[in-house]
Amino acid sequence: MQFNSKKKLIFCSLIIISIFLLDRFTKLYVINYAEINGSVDIFLTTFLNIYLIWNKGIAFGLLNFEQSVIYALISWIIAIISLVILVMIKKAKDIRVYFLTFVFAGAISNLFDRYYYSAVPDFLDLHINNFHWFVFNVADIFISLGVICLIIFEIIFNKPLRNEKD
Image (tube, rainbow, N blue to C red; front, side):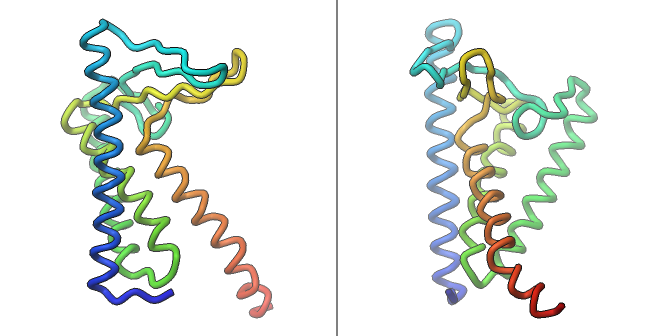
C-alpha cells in the first residue's frame, strides 16, 4: 500500500483529529459529570464502570509521581517520543502508517491533558469480578491498539524476511 505524501498527510491528519476529538469529548463529558454530581462512579455493566481518576503517571497510571520535576521530565520524554513517532509516520509506506497514527493521536491527546490539567483523566474501569484492570481512557485504547497491531505486523510480515536471511 503506497501513499502519495499529500493524501497520506490528509488521511493521517483526519485520523489524528478524529481520535483527539473523540478522546476530548469523552473526557470533558466525564469531567463535567463529576463537577455536576461531585464524583463519577457509574456501574454500566458487570465488567465496565465509569470511575474518574486523575493520572499523573504514564499509561495506565504507571510511574505515578507527585514531584513536579519528575512529572515535567516524563512529560518532555513523552513529547519527544511523540515527535519520533511523527517522523516514523512520515517515513512509513505501508499499513503501519495507521498503527503509528493511532499511537501518535492517543499520545498527543494525553499529552494535551498533562499540560492543561497537570494530569490525565482516566475513567474506563474494566473488571472481572473483583479483578480490576488499570483505569484508562479513549486515547489509551488507541495507543494500545496501535502498539498491538504494530507487534502483530512485525511478527507476521517480518518473520519471512528473517527466515530468508538464515
